[in-house]
Length: 334
Length: 246
Image (cartoon, rainbow over all chains, first blue to last red; front, side, top):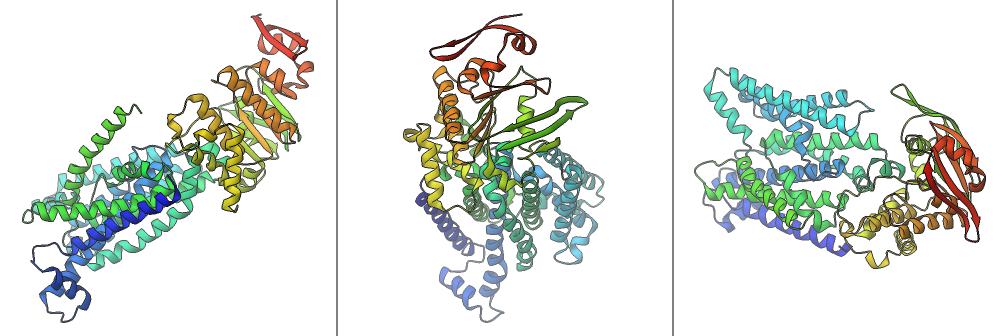
């Protein structure tokens, strides 16, 4: 695919994100008209006005978070697949999402989450940070890709077991209920402070992805060839792990577990970018943002009164779609 | 181009490289020969600094970015993880030149494609190619790196006779242009015909080093490879044909 085609693709994905963002702002149970809503959003005059409140405090953070979470998951998925040279890799492999979930679950169970508004996402970020520290300690500076993956599997298993233990021993059925629902992933009832909590780690994660991009291309031919082309494999491993952990940890902290975005999006867009891992990074980020925006719109349109969870929908739609991709590639004899 | 001094490497208590001293100068096409397990691949990887070894390697001593412009490596496994167009795979070799102008990169890729006769395939997805064509693409990738030295690990394995001759002839041509090649080769006939010099490895030691005619003796073949062969100087040059096991 020509260079022109790549930028056209990014522009198309960007336009889709913008359109879905607008649609997300204009969708909700409050019944605010299009013109009224946009006026309230932009002018923002009269803080007591119901429309202003809904637009600025409810819908705007929700739409912004959908873009951030989707973008982070898409980017992290593309990085993991490029780094492991495996189309089945996904961001959860490092154990960060499971650890972030454990942090959140402990906050919910202990009642810390009700102490102040950001206790839950901060506890989740703490869980993610611990998992990364463990990962670095386990895989070490001389560790191989395999040790990183095995460490991720082990950390994931420990965190999942911890979460199950908390649920198991929970004396409070309401807390248990809340935990189960939180883990399904959602963007409902989030505020601008959630945006603030997630913004910094996500930007840091995205910034770390930039120096890794060219190395991912070189890695297409294997670690030995990449190393002899000047890629510093150990440094790249560290940057990749840190970047993915920041992106996924922050996403899980504010939205809970949202599956399949990081797996499906890189898959779907790989051919459109001519297979090149570095080009897949921005494309998968935009695609992920569009997917989460669309899914978050869908949960509000399909069952407005039932609080259908976002993570449930992405898995319900993502998994069959993934099967379809597998069947398609089988037919093509790959 | 490449100097190895007393290179030693032990893995799991077993000596793999036992004091290798070797230098490759400009204009040399050196064939690295020896039975399976003699340490050929390990020698190439240790020389490049891909695995830590004791002793000195002029390449391994370089910082990674400089080493990338000093030597290109063609490993035995022909791994291409993603389905990219041929041209994009060849362009990966330009990763060694991060500061190069785009026009320079394009020219280097075009030269590499032309040299391996890949012009007609340049936009084809690489997974749609045959194994031999993929091998050519990877060779072009190594050429696009435009390093004065090429290290190749069994570049002729799994290729048809024409492709084997093409690959060896390319290495000989590179050497004739003043570049250097160090390639491990199992086919002694090809090595004898196309290499300017042969280095024989046995159990991690260099047991012979010199012109093909001087190295490939009845005694060495018996001791190192355990075979008997017919060797003759013909009008076509040196001909080597293995005959039987000893």
